[in-house]
Length: 87
Image 1 (tube, rainbow, N blue to C red):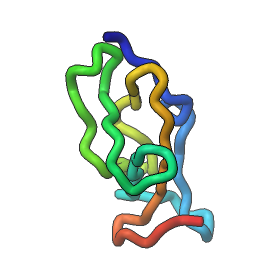
Image 2: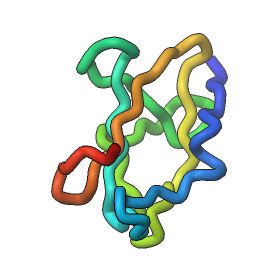
Image 3: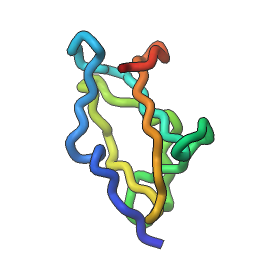
């Protein structure tokens, strides 16, 4: 099964509430309306999973794109490297 690319995958540079780059920040992916982890993948073929949370690099960006199964609905939660929720 081929996946769909999440829009966040190409444009994201995460920042803290103060505007600092969110180096080592984390993106948690959940099934919408729950705290149940939602699977994401590193490529369109959906064979290599991301960790949950996905850890951002030192520039606050993703090292790999984020793909998901078609029809998947997400809740994304951004946190600092110390697990403090952003926003």
